[in-house]
Length: 131
Image 1 (spheres, rainbow, N blue to C red):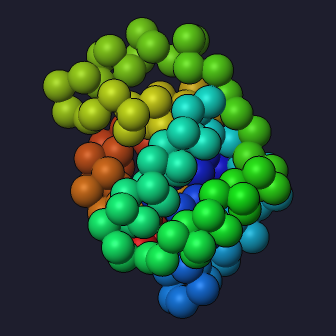
Image 2 (image 1 turned 120 degrees about the vertical axis):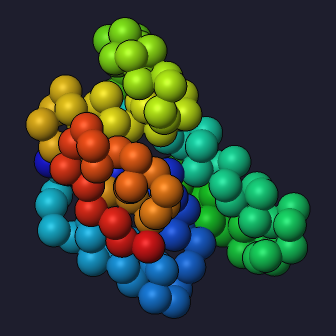
């Protein structure tokens, strides 16, 4: 099992270059993926930002949004993670803390394309940086 964050899922759904390839390769190493239940909204937000910022064309963004639906990422409830997320509040953002708390809880590796998150999270759980 791996805990997969929204940066990897964004790269997987948006890019066909090295970023998309690295995301796909990381995910192919395990067949069981889990993420906090907000992962779809966070991935949607990232794709929306890329579209609004004109980093990708609107049609490409719409296609990436449709790809979110076929991802077989298991959604983990956030409620049981909230106490640990609170403990992490001084060092990690709320959204990132959910991924870290989940990785700790499942004793799983957190896979991210976000170097800053990887650096912070590595003090709490195993991390694989793919970005």
